[in-house]
Length: 181
Image (cartoon, rainbow, N blue to C red):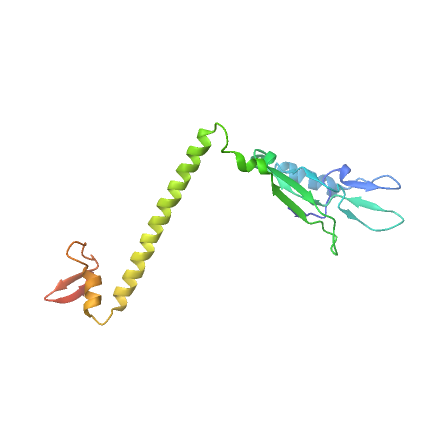
């Protein structure tokens, strides 16, 4: 999305007088985008978004564009693009909106979409729980390495209650704590 300062095709330029000149940069830009398999997203509002603001030799061009690839085109019906009028700058702000019907994909008979969403949500919850457990363990290890004066609170947290697993990083030797190698 942006202002490319190049036109893609001959129809990207408007002349009020004279005929358009052929320019290698126009062909190069068009070939470059075609090689990348990029296309302009459909849009509303002004086609020509830039002008030279001259009375004599007035020109308008389509420089601002939203480029999309083939994968994006699968979702294209759910998005609309609109270019606003240029302000102080010569660039036109682009607005890409999600069309409201895209939010209603889960209405009707779409069990595959609902099951895919449920599966992804479960994966996210599992990953979040795993991350939280790893962060808790890292903080405990750091806390144990720093020590806590070897008081009763420290011992209780290190060894836990009789029903908890013993921390494998430490062992008790003759009543003293020893860090495992």
